Length: 112
Image 1 (cartoon, rainbow, N blue to C red):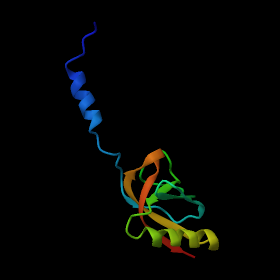
Image 2 (tube, rainbow, N blue to C red):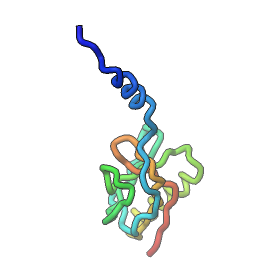
Image 3 (cartoon, rainbow, N blue to C red):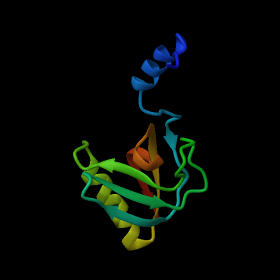
Image 4 (spheres, rainbow, N blue to C red):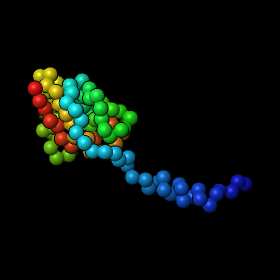
């Protein structure tokens, strides 16, 4: 029977209680919304053609916001306006990484 290293149970415990991935929070540069996807998973997912996303997460151009978050409806409407008008937007990434490596957003800015 194989014996576990004394450090192994402690390492397993650290992995089990590790917090969600966090990174730098900041505004993206202005860019066009390539796609706006409402989902059945209680969130919407905008794809924005940004050149840089300082969060450093795997998906650089896909973001998410929960429907239940304060202000989420106004952010969705701003993103929808961008899609229909061709106006550029920027989003504030919170530094929180969600499912699939998407960055959570907490604000949307829109400009002509």
